[in-house]
Length: 634
Image (cartoon, rainbow, N blue to C red):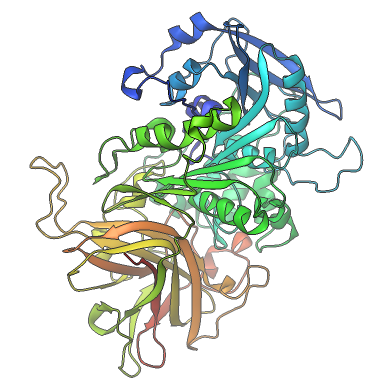
């Protein structure tokens, strides 16, 4: 899902072709012009077809076919809810993402399809439509069956195809790619879900560990959730915030109930479903992809961004679930230092103030995605075995690494402990009844970034956290200056011993790389990088779900309680001379909705229900709070 409606049209272009291929004879990336639309028009022609599904519904499909019919070409399909516009066989899409020119010059047949109920396709749209495992009649349709029917028509009717089909897409089209992998069509040989929507309660877009990601979801649902009376070429209008300050706008709304009443109404189906399913119940499980990833037949390449603000969880966990539930699948993963879909939109050299070096995205296309598709769809035997099981960019040291499994085999889970005097050490505390305290006040929530803006930034994933360190409702613990590198490769586990003065609270844990005071990238750095506190990973846990997402539990006021949860995987080196910092807070606004800090239905509570809570984070011999780090042994 995308972070804001302003990017819907942009993603219409990008998600339709977020994949690339290369053979050993292919020109260097530097020799290929980006957005070479003249080449496409001169060398391709376009067909538009309404492809029938098994229940009689027809899906609008744009098909770009090489004019060169002297050879057979593989099909690359993207199914999208963001439109395959422009409509008309004489109108060509402005394919402009980084990989597109390479992709077309490899002479793939490029096919983009409006999914059921979106834009010019018939039928009724459903968000993350549930998979039907045992289909009994032609009325039992889902995204897997629609993909099967689409592929079956394509291999039989699209001119000059070689009978091999690949599917790829970013974000929501990443979800449709995962569903394609469950279609079972024999012509489907390779699938690349990229930043895939996977679980909207545990880790992607809508919730993280049960905490509602209000800012992203409100803007998306307002535009995307409107009912469509008939097929249309027109895009939805986004919400007019009439503001440039998201913190102020959402704080003035008061409650989620107010947002629903003022702006969403009864017509916004999925928003209202979200409001009426506060726990991880059968509704959410039916809409969760990972429950169905068994017996996956095509080869899989998961691609994602280490600093994806939307679907980082989905990339890591789609890969892990296939490894566990479908061990016979040829399954691989590539994670780079990108924002959401950054491999298709940027060179990957930086995110915000943090630099990663040149050639990041070029490396990916040359060594991972293009060899993957060309091997399975073109039969390029020279590429056999070239794509590693896990190709991971290690930020901090800024190097690509290849691993035979993920997390790597030589990882030691090592606890690092919170201690008195804001210390962070690998030694367990020995003190008695030691804790740090802060007051969490919902009336003055901690902002997720120090800037004033309306649209959620993608750069917050690596933002400088010094602004948060200065707040009294954020506590920070840091190591001494490191005398050697520490590399983390895998999930981070927060294991906190806490007590609160109320019956619920959120816990946000950030893993931070503190740069040396004299650090500079260059003489002309636009931002003071000395002492920079780079967020490497941050995650929230809604406290009442600490033991179960299905059955939330109230805290007992004043009682010491364990809150243990997983942060998405990290691939980062804290270099010698840097420090490791852990920050803890109980609000992250307006990224996450405010917890009233009482055990109640947050989606329907009133403004009077929001109260302050005194939060204690313990760090003594009896109640030692720690962060379990996946330390790579070298």
